[in-house]
Image (cartoon, rainbow, N blue to C red):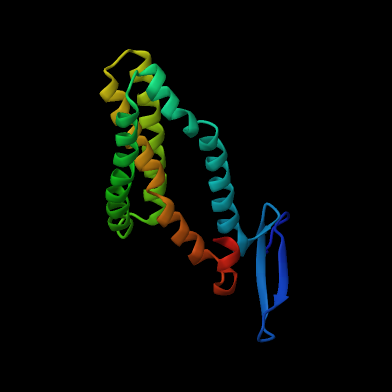
Length: 165
């Protein structure tokens, strides 16, 4: 039975010691670059998506929820505090569950809180409920930065970490 099937790409390269190395390609990407490229693409996509919406939240709070500027700033003080707490627990849980699973769990939880925020505004819930969902959404979405950075740094060679960070 052949080890290679049609459609499998294998390159034989020589490493620094002159030893032959076999590397495979996934979707035209070298195997040792798949994780860094996927993480970078996900970060860029998330950044573009949030960049088009996050900047309008203060306007939403001021105009739609009729909040004072001081209360809006309180939300922006509470969000990093929630992020710090979730970051701590995420690192603890990642030791048993895994960094990628915690990251995915946190991101999906953040998306769920965003939907709850939208629905709570649409169904005319009290402003504090919508604001609570905003704080939770922001905290969950931003608490994954250290976990994804550590996965990224583990997946690239030490001499290339500056390029990928």
